[in-house]
Image 1 (cartoon, one colour):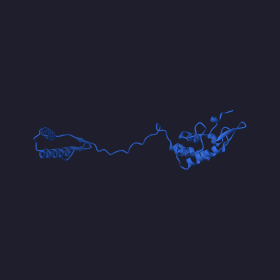
Image 2 (tube, one colour; image 1 turned 45 degrees about the vertical axis):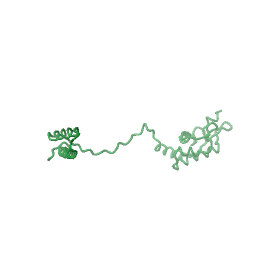
Image 3 (cartoon, one colour; image 1 turned 90 degrees about the vertical axis):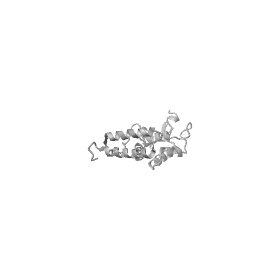
Image 4 (tube, rainbow, N blue to C red; image 1 turned 60 degrees about the horizontal axis):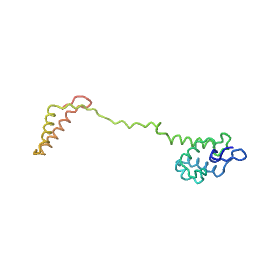
Length: 171
């Protein structure tokens, strides 16, 4: 004879045969109905009022998940059916799309960003003005407005020296 903890939730043993434990069988029907209705496993576990067993009166999402996966609830292996095969298939189809293990999930690549390749070849003038800016920045008594003008001039020269896609510029 099987111990009560080895008998699936919703069943009991009477006269050597599996029979329905009515309050638990109603809870199994409720679990399937709520899950097919869109509730999450965690929500269903939190709403369960029938104790899972005397050792574990509170439900968790793993208990609900095991019930949704247990084929005995459709009448297999000598157990009386509690739910229809259609409800079992529907719940498991939903479950297979809702819960995918993260190790097997292929994350979609981010959308490709458009990158314009440019080639920058500094001219002698650019190198000279860059060096002059650096020397002036090290000097404490420098005219800040003059340095700012040089920085803007250098930026304009660098921009003009850019060659889109490695091609020639008109500058």
